[in-house]
Image 1 (cartoon, helix red, strand yellow):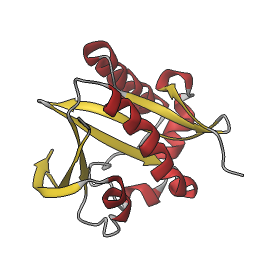
Image 2 (spheres, helix red, strand yellow):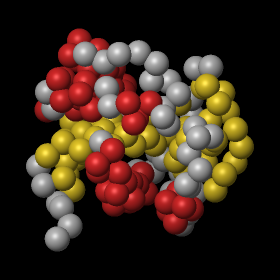
Image 3 (cartoon, helix red, strand yellow):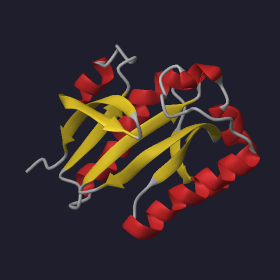
Image 4 (cartoon, one colour):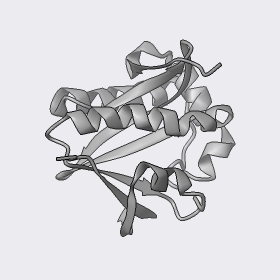
Amino acid sequence: MKPEIEFARLPKIKPTEIAAHMSDPRLAEHMPLLTFDWDEATAAGFVAKKEEHWARNGLGHWAFLADGQYVGWGGFQKEGDEWDFGLVLKPDRFGLGIRIARKALEFAVADERIPFVTFLLPPSRRNIGALKRLGARHIGEVNYDGARFLKFRLETDLT
């Protein structure tokens, strides 16, 4: 049976749980900006910064829950005039990525402010089949905070 997927605001998750998630060395393999250690204070600061996006833009990052258990975080962050979507799951829950992404993208499709969504993936991510199944297309490479990423775009304006 497939777990029920829910979205919650990040402050509902204990900072220690987020810190433990982000300290898993398997995440750093595909997160070039993950270059520091996470602890409770780091996680609390991270949550506060993500909540600022909700206050400023009315949309931001969520905690993802499967059958009520925290499995990761992600969501939308406005970067200039674009809405970027990110998804960071616990390694043992990577298989939920496409379901969570589809559910999150329903928000983008329903929001007239978001004609398209961008995705940034490090070049180490060779398996991009999920993005293609969602309908995203590769549009180039970008440098973000000193790291190189592959950039994809998904049109959400279905009219």
